[in-house]
Amino acid sequence: MAPLAAQRHAANGSYYHLSQVALVGHACEGMACFAARKDNPQCWDQAHARMPPVFCLGQCYQAPAVFGNDVKPNVAAFARQHVLLGNLLKGGARRLETYVENGGGIALRHAIAMPHTDLISVIAASGLRGRGGAGFPTGRKWATVAAAGASRKYVVANADEGDPGAFSDRLLMEDDPFLLIEAMLVAAIAVGAEHGYIYLRKEYPGALASLRMALQEAYQAGWLGPSVLDTSHRFELELVIGQGSYVCGEETAMLNSIEGKRPEVRVRPPQITEHGLFSAPTLVNNVETLCAVPWIVTHGAQAYAELGTPASRGTKLVSLNSLFRRPGLYEVEFGTPLRQIVEQVGGGMKRGRLLGIMVGGPLAGLVPPALLDTPFAYEEMQSIGCAVGHGGMIAFADDTSISELLAEVFRFGALESCGKCTPCHLGSPELAAMWQAVLNGQRISRQRWHALVDALAESSLCGHGRGLAEFARAIERHYPQEVARCFA
Ligand SMILES: Cc1cc2nc3c(=O)[nH]c(=O)nc-3n(C[C@H](O)[C@H](O)[C@H](O)COP(=O)(O)O)c2cc1C
Ligand code: SF4
Image (cartoon, rainbow, N blue to C red):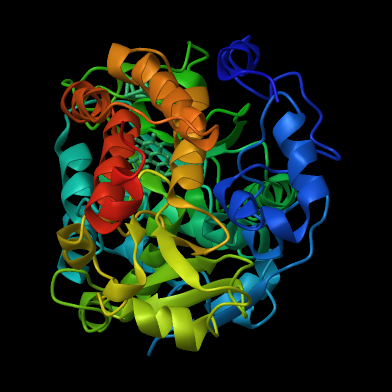
């Protein structure tokens, strides 16, 4: 394999990894494919050797994955209400007619009939929190954008789904595209926006085809356009396709990307709710966050708030990788113990002994087997140094060592750094090199490791650098002996 510096240079040649790349035949080197690499070493070696890297095709349930294989995963719900997977469980709703037959459109009609302040109150009272990773209260975000005094505002759906291990947004967009469109219409009415974008990752051609067709149908049916369902509401919705960059999932980098600028993270303040896309107040929500909105508006805030826990209301999609006996996409209520997800939903390990579960991608931690009784909910996951993230759950078996995992996570971190701040730009490649050295039989300096991790934690501009530090700290907290034996 080429050294990291050369890989990094090749990957950043045009900033984006995939702008000039046809993905057909590309093998994936996301974390779930890394976890499953021994199931098909040839495929993994091919992925690892090839530049530019493709970090997640969203097929973690059949890893190691290759672009073009669109076999669908298991889909099931383990929640009292099917907030998100209702249509998928009926075989999908790719046509507007099917969507409406299944009850779609009620939320939009409610939203049109309600004062926008009441609509925002419903979302706030439901307790919905952002599913993109940070868990920010959605109603509060909507209220801020609604209150911003500007004639032009935007609603943007973050469909970049960069967290390796998660494929929930992909499935929602492929099989229930009108759910996202209806949710964005409701959001636009609530905040007073007439324009919206869906920022979709290039690695999801199935979602692209589905959304393209759905947008066309929605315009033809008068859901979108200058007069939404013959009312005074206008909403124009466009698709923007990413070109392969993990950091473009970070909302300010994403807005720069939509504007055609170099997609680096922006310094805040100003917050994007006041000064976002093209300097206008902008609401950015994750696809899954938005997809909960039609159910909440249709069934009421109280019905949603009864699901989950007092601080983490509602349901969450979890994506289980190929090392589970039953990999797939599942809807669970917040508060479900991880053990139940691992053993009952996922059916336990397909092979090997469990090393740990990477929940929410490589910027969170690795939950060790001893902590599987932790409830899957925001604060509870934080209390063990981990996170809900976007709900990707990658089981690692004991055929992966902690040093191998650290080397791989920092390699990913280095290749995906946007380069704006030094601890991440230079620190993550050095950390990757340190753990590669461990794999080559060397020992590393404990002081240097801590200095680099502390710098990442304290002076990174965005959650990429900070998340890498959180990952490092969680690993050292939960696997102290495995880390300590690598120090000189
Ligand atoms: C490095 C990085 C990558 C991110 N990638 C995504 C992503 O792929 N999808 C997403 O919805 N949010 C992602 N986020 C979070 C977004 O910045 C933002 O918080 C989110 O889209 C807001 O929507 P929500 O409130 O509905 O969660 C990422 C954040 C960081 C720091
Ligand atoms: S932490 Fe990394 S990805 Fe985030 S702004 Fe800094 S260099 Fe860019």
